[in-house]
Length: 136
Length: 291
Image 1 (cartoon, rainbow over the protein chains, first blue to last red):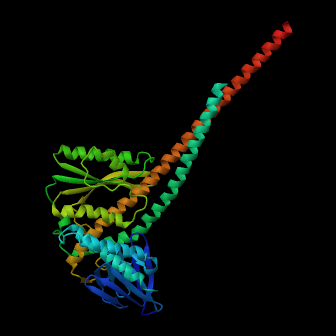
Image 2: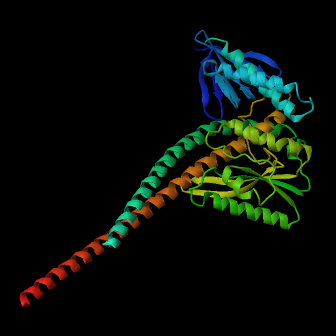
Image 3: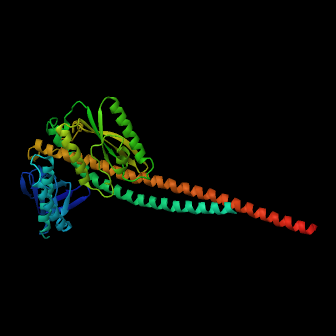
């Protein structure tokens, strides 16, 4: 179909998704953005967050870790260290990770290197939880 | 007769050992297959990542990044990547030997060397022999990219802060199932990226960069470290199982040799015993006939 966009989500373990979609929403580090076919070439780093796309009228959600997105007019390549589809997420575990990270964050200084690590862990947990709440 | 029984018992013992080594060989083979698949699956990620990183590095003057900072290498750290488990031939021994040689050489030059062992075998060996920063043992059972991220988090901040000047990674490069080559590779300061690659200008697209290309490169560099470390982890895991397969195959063959030579000995001893008994009987009847 003319207005479809090829999407590939590549992680170190496997190609998590490969196929054509109608639209994709990407958590870029300068803010979330949507891509349709014919987008200008773009290279953007990603924030830990929620990535979603529509395929055959159905919306699919992924929780993604750091990485980047390479957009050309007909293809989007998402390269991320992890990508978990909403139905693969253990919500209880994510909730526990979130609580854990939150309680530890209150205990340490902002300047500490661990602070950044914990903040990232918290962001991951939040992304997982919000993805797991979405139904496909 | 006692000798006969002893030999028989030995044969039984060796057969049992053979069963174990054969089973271990098969387990290693299946694990090896698994790690080979993972290496295969990692390849698209790594090549794509390198393409983007290289084309980005071509655009940006990247020499200013803290991970590329060249300092007088007085304080050196080395990641020594061994397996967690033994019984894999010379896999760990060769690597440990190389690491020792490396430490000796660098200390000989008056440098201060510390180790970051990954994998239990190296940790146990160097525990009392070298200065150890932080170790990651018992990690190969089940690992993913997050292990590479954890190791990077151990090494990147101290380097940026200037706690040490050079970082090496010593691991078994995976050549094929029966060949693993221990290598020393310098990780920090990172060699300049993208300087010696030719990218087809036709293939290079002019992208919109979000955020700017400099910031993007800065964000991708830690991911590059993850890629390098994850690859070393995968190669170690595949190499370990490949080496174990070979070692166990050898052991099984040795068991077979031992069994066949013991069986031969047993048969000879049995034959000798029968002959001796026959001689006795013949001697006895002859004596009777004479009487």
